[in-house]
Amino acid sequence: MKFFVDTADVAEIQDLAATGLVDGVTTNPSLVAKAGRNFVDVVAEICDIVSGPVSAEVVATDTDGMLRQAHALRKIAPNVTIKLPLTPDGLRACKTLSDDGTMVNVTLCFSAAQAILAAKAGATFISPFVGRLDDIGQTGMELIADIMAIYGNYPAFKTEVLVASVRNPLHVIEAGRLGADVVTLPPGVLRQLYGHPLTDKGLAAFLSDWEKTGQTIPEV
Image (cartoon, rainbow, N blue to C red; front, side):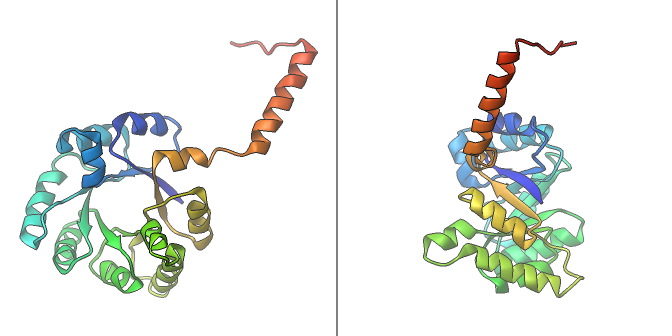
């Protein structure tokens, strides 16, 4: 499973990328707005930090506009992934870009039917939003199970399932159990994965016992 970080906060990305556990980054207009900085500058900085895919979203709603914006975004860095909405215009743009060898992340997926269309359009990634489905009383991870089962029936589908709108570590665990290719995590959720009270308790006991020995380990 690949881990992408879902943020436009460059400092957060630098800190998490230093762990060696980050495979890519996803951004969107809302995250960039929170950062309060120039969009192109932010994407360029992120691409310098992370060598994996960095999703940068277009804001045009028509196919021609999306393609023009995608052309500009691709110039930022080779690892830029064009993020497109799951609309008829977005899928047309996806087909054109994917045929040209451009990485495409089709976002705002809320049904298996939509995921099939994205795969047929050649999307590199499909982003089902599990948390937003949970918010309206549906079970987001059931959508992931459906998409994984359908994609598994068709080896010609190369689209990777990127679990988005992740709200907690349980989403990550279930995504892994289902075999999802990628999860994109807010920095806080990624840090939650480290935590367990028994780990903290065990480490405290080990250190206490070591201190009682009066020994030190030489540092070179």
